[in-house]
Image 1 (cartoon, rainbow, N blue to C red):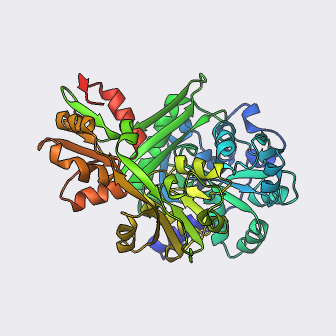
Image 2: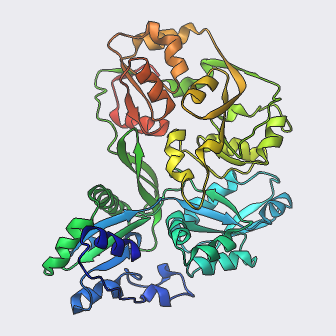
Length: 495
């Protein structure tokens, strides 16, 4: 509510604003899962009904809680703000001990989507200190501080919340002290966008007006954020394709990458069928083209040399750029000993899972979108990591590149190129090449066709290709390129 009030005052400084507080049906149904109750708009209906009665001129909602039927109905809407869209799992301090003992962890959630995707992810992402531990879910309701108190008391081993709600409470002078107290000594994991996509429009605040109230419509036109509104419209429309209501077991979210935006949807649809789909990917034709995806043959490019790690990591946060940065042949090297004393973030979920196998607690990942994509995440009050206090663990060849970009970096391994005549023949035939690293391009650029179209994932590879004078077609991730490749069905393919 205050966010909208502040925006109105900023755009219309002479306008008087009066807040009208109210409760919803969802607030009163604290003891039962809403998916077991008929109806929709449990948290928004009583609020938008005040527009019909003339009690209010503008209604303010969390857009995640509003049905598509109402959002695409006859009223006027403007998305005025959107915080981080991710979910966060918050754990009691005893969780590692329970994992070591092979116990069952109870995770509180009232969302079928989170129950479907997040609990399975946590089973692989938590430190694998004992193969016998299990992750189960248990119904929980109540506002944020109520749920945190239930976690604090030990009623749950973990709970899953929206980061946006926590961030807004931590920004509040009134609420922040209590929330910080409840978060003290807790362990957190920011759930990845691709493995655990959030609910459509999560984190978005929307203002609503009756179209007949011209003054209110004018205000919404002044305070709305067009790009955010467009994003949310797309997410709501795509969500309709897969199901509606509180029983949703899928997520839909907008992901920014390389100055572009894509929508990603994944989970199970209303028929129980699993799906994962990227929308608005680059439009290129593969008709009668030979496509070579280097990710299909990753093991053929390089050998790796591991160093005796004897350097001290001064920073409090470590970003592991590749799981190979932690020696796979050792479970007790100096790097792991130091990392276990740090906040740990990683490039993607493959690295996350590999570190979890070594008993390392990982707070979050870049979803394979590159470290730069985490700057806004690090700045959230929930995370509060200074980018100056991050050390990148990387390979010897990339250490200097990271340092030139302003990041502290330490090399823990070396990369040695393999000679492979078979790969040369693939590159020589390919019309479209998807590079997963700049080193691949450096090694094989001399045998590629002059007219070849170069593609790559977002992040460091795209930046280095541009530095080399290549204007690549950038996809969000390797998986998104694979989806494009499968849907394009070219007549022939190198790999």
